[in-house]
Amino acid sequence: MNFTQDLSMIELIVNASLVVKLVMALLAVVSLMSWYYIFRKGFAIRDARSKTDKFEREFWSGGDLTDLFQSIASNRQHSGALERVFEAGFREFAKLRGQKSLDAATTINSVRRAMRATYQREIDDLESHLAFLATVGSVSPYVGLFGTVWGIMHAFRGLANVSSATLAAVAPGIAEALVATAIGLFAAIPAVVAYNRFAHDLDRLAVRFESFMEEFSNILQRQVK
Image 1 (tube, rainbow, N blue to C red):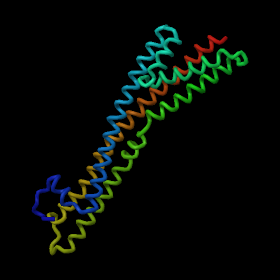
Image 2: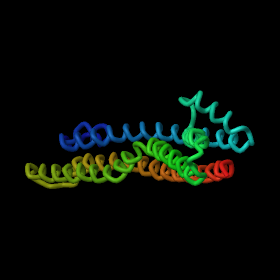
Image 3: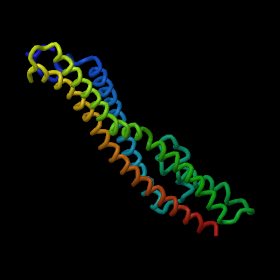
Image 4: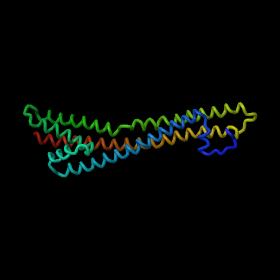
């Protein structure tokens, strides 16, 4: 590296060693992917929360549950997660309540299992790609640190060919190496913040779903007594 060159960010990246460039490229790709999943997951959770609010207002408005079930079943592709949980439970209830051989406890337990299975699928779908964000947040700084260590080693090895070791001789190499750590942090920080936020939002949604399943089970239990 020319010691008198401009130490701008672009110059540091262009003149970095091959290994450091590969590390930077990897971190840049990972950062772009994490931002894609951040926006995608943010919209998905906001949509799930909006549809949950809408369904709860309809459910507790006192309307006929059969009409609500038919409305959801006929428009299932646009229904929300909690609506599909309700649909699974009511479908199981409608199938079993006409069977004289089954007591109330058996019917309600079957309804709860049906809702629980649908609930688990919906939560798993909402949690998809969160593990990727967690991995990016925990691993990216170390990948960037690897690039920094390698770059510093490369810079000091270059001093072997220099008659006098000065700060001007080693500064460009160290600076380009530190860029890798900066990019690693740039990739990690948004991923960590987004993961923590989404995990909190999903926990709150899961609590609302579980509360609804219990309340809905109690409503159905009163109907089969």
